[in-house]
Image (cartoon, rainbow, N blue to C red; front, side):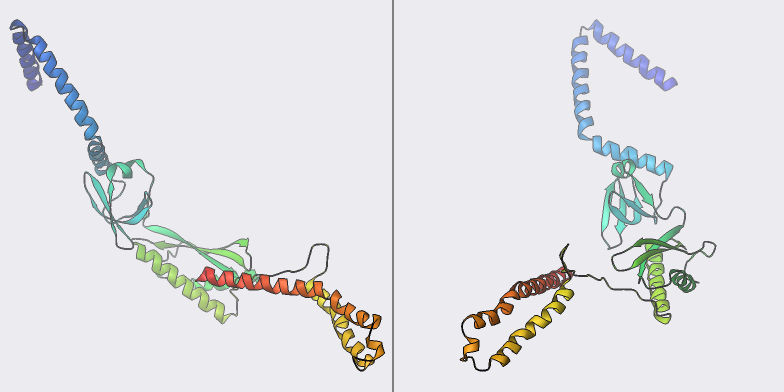
Length: 292
């Protein structure tokens, strides 16, 4: 308090002295110039000041500490260092990210280590032919004594959707969580146990299936058309046997045109078959290039 009164008294004395010496305009000019310089410096260092203030608030509130696993600004990793300007995050792939405190303070942040537990949602699919209640029992039996799993929380097997080639469900369970390796190893262990249990109980995990239907809406399926075409395919051979030599009178003229008629009538069907095979070949090649 005494220091403040002293500084105020000294400033009034200086201004009073300068006014007697008629230098008050000079002082006003100097103060205006200092204000402009201060404003320019404020704009120049606003990011540094914002990071510094954000760092002070983070240090006081402590939303996270060194060693916590967080996800913020599309960066997921473990905190290695917290200072007044940046937060150092070590990503799971080894990269070090220096995140400005202002971005961390202003953005949404997920702290996976705050409560020390984490839930794993494992997606699995089984064949449509399986008994779903039996699948639930097998999965729950396989999940007993998973490392780091919280025994007080029950394993949940919840069916989710009818997939393209399987009925999909989620296996949800809770684990003790300190670092990301706890999550990765617990999930890997569950996958191995479920696969082993399914093999022992002959429960099928189906591969993706695609069904190609060549039938036209309002028409007939390809299998039906092929069955109807088989008698027609045998007619030309019978006609040639009855005709004898190709040079005989029965094989000339109008009779020869009649013998060729069944072949011409099969041309649309053959084109349909070739087109279907071509479409199937294109689909298979597309899937091969997709996987590679």
